[in-house]
Length: 168
Image (cartoon, rainbow, N blue to C red; front, side, top):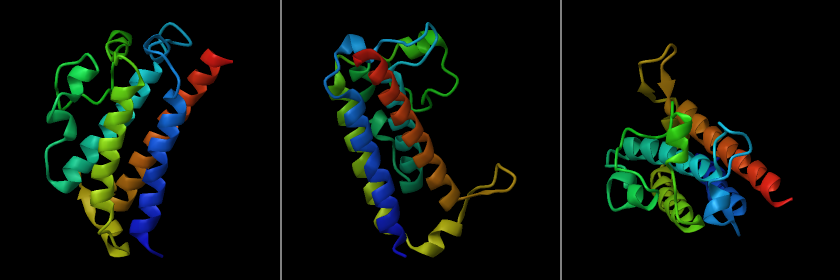
């Protein structure tokens, strides 16, 4: 099996899921919450892109896209490469404030291009390489790639669900 093609297909679904989830929404809708402390669509999409950007920048051995350019500013945030949304308070969730779908879609697209760059050269043997020994058992590249894809797809689905609540 062509591992690179399989993973490129998997990760290539994320931008389409995100586009479906934010298409046609206003800035106010992106910031709406289905419950007082729930995540917003804007935060969910920002978070999934942040996690993917962080993980793939690390794998590529280069700076995160978020740290180059004005990505943070486009979301109403300060640039902080360690901030990917994990552990955010309800106030921090509300602080992710793009002016519409554009910044979200642009960032997801840039992260997708970075991801494709990494995935294109992978072979089956690469998946068994241990990349994080801080866990028991140590994390292999294959496990990390599945974990990140799973996280992204789940959050894109959550964003789509909230869109359905807002637009039905």
